[in-house]
Image (cartoon, rainbow, N blue to C red; front, side, top):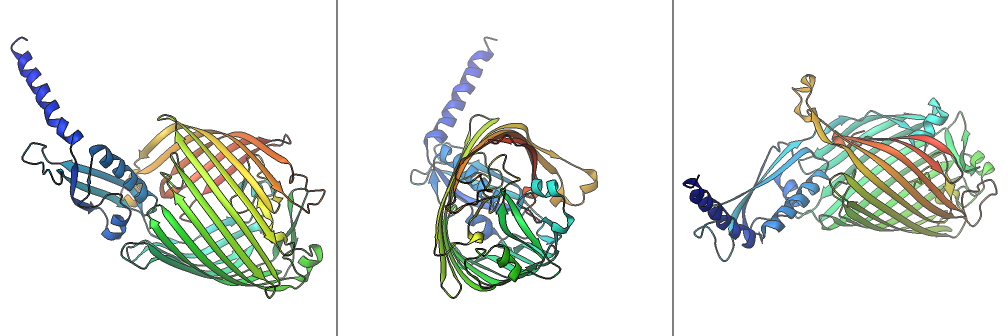
Length: 473
């Protein structure tokens, strides 16, 4: 033992001396190589990186930038798996350039997703899955048919061409993420559509939506949407959009609700201009566990030959904090205020519409002109990301292995909706709304999210609620 001890001590000291320069010295990124991408072009991947060839940084900064780059690529929804590794040359005196630092090679390996999907979607025409299951009305189901492509020309352009039958009949062509410059800062997109319904939500009573049904089409609309996005940074965007729409409704809708859209005519041509700022620093857009999100939005709409106008200003702040490897805390605050020349029901729908929700109120809708909603969640990682290989899928690697991550959660929400002309039967507006609950979330590949929760609200209403999000559909 006495013979080997000096030798072991020498190796330990040598290792410390060799490693010390890397921690204190600058690292120079000499090369970035990419593999595994057969459809996606290299430039599409390089745009999302927080790293650049020729950049000089410390080892700690390198590890942080690699994590950010991996998150950025994951949020493109173009890849199933992303692996980023680096290789440092032996840090002896001959390899270190005092002007640049230690040379470093970055290697990125990705597994692409499947980008061509038959657009076959069963859409439940209710505020959420729980509301539809409670009423279970098969007449309130829409079947979407068409084609969805998520990566045209290898640069992430997305197109949907489809039609709908059932509750809603429609035709739609959407084409977005058209990048105009090599830096990826200027992006345009557009959509043209037409749809019609034989059932229409014309009002609210006892905090539930009211519907009118007919054998004929009672609600029709045709429109075009154009949008332009300036991407100041990978995670900072300014989006401007213009929507032109011609609408026609049956006289029976105005008979039941004269304030349906702010005037007594059954046709309307509306112009909607929207600006939205987003600063999205979340690690995973579909199910974030760290980072923050800030947005501000201004919507101006005019109709009825410009005699009717309305404006809405909204802001959202979200914060996600990992407490340790298993526990996570999140909070979200959304505030909105609106003004309108004339009272309009379709402009005042809040809770139950457009992603505004309060735990325990899934079966209700609440209308108003101004609102504030706070959502908080504590999550526990029950099953870390696990990948299961199936023999039946061995020949289709884009679907194998099947990943699964499971969280259990506790929720606590609060909200207040201000309605200056509420009906007596709609007693949930102009009062504090509180809800709490527990639940479970399952995340799989292609950003699929399944949720099950048990909630109770301030009124004492209890319920089991379901949620599902399948982006590929």
